[in-house]
Length: 334
Image (cartoon, rainbow, N blue to C red; front, side, top):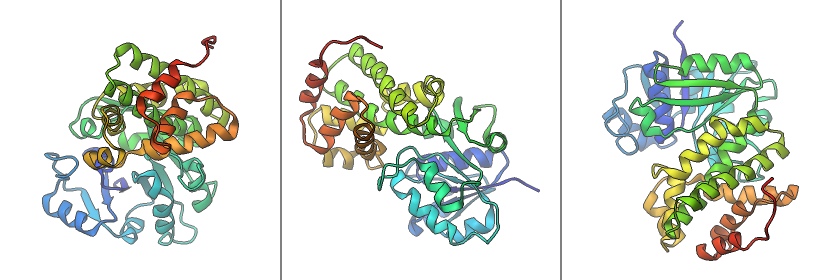
């Protein structure tokens, strides 16, 4: 029997993963909620909007019907934005047959905007705690995966057998997969790094140099670790691909839409204009609010995340936020 996988979300990342799976020989179905987008993808046999010049293999199918997805495969990989994660899974659940074992993985990076919970908690609530579940995260730009540039990623699951199975579907000569059992650590690293990428972009937009960027990355990693460990993650996870690796990527390269958004703010552009110019989901905006609220809830000192939140939600000028960080009292590094 040929291996099958269904991908939910036909943005740049969902399309890149679908291309990867199909090129690996999997029968692959890619879903988008937008019927017009699906028609265009089917006609062009490529995603000209997000990943042009990457032709779809013949074993990559397109649909806008979750009923098709449920009938096609019980191996589901979710790549929709975090704000759509819960509702997408709720809609999918209505088409799952009673007693069918569904396998859910996600490459979505963020918290649930309704209550700040981690995404694995949504999966547990909808499909049950025994459901095979995994998260994919790490230093990955969709275009580089689609164009077959070497990439490494972490697949985390509390069920190692499932993480290994998913790894066999996606692993290739140019896409290296590492398994982990630390779902919480991988989730927190993937969510909070987007907030810090906005901060790094702001600093660069203001004209600060490499010294500032390196300091933000290093102290930002410290903030991720403090929150992640408090929520149940493991310190060593944050020193790996899904922590430090992803943080470096998004803070230093302009393929990162979160970094580009921060750059625009640092250059003095209005938030609304900056979002419009990028024209894609900027996960760090909502993650900044959720991270700030979690830090307050657990009484964790996260000054970079806090100042980023104030720029985005309290109209604080970016330069003032940087001055606030520099004006903090002296303390030991650790």
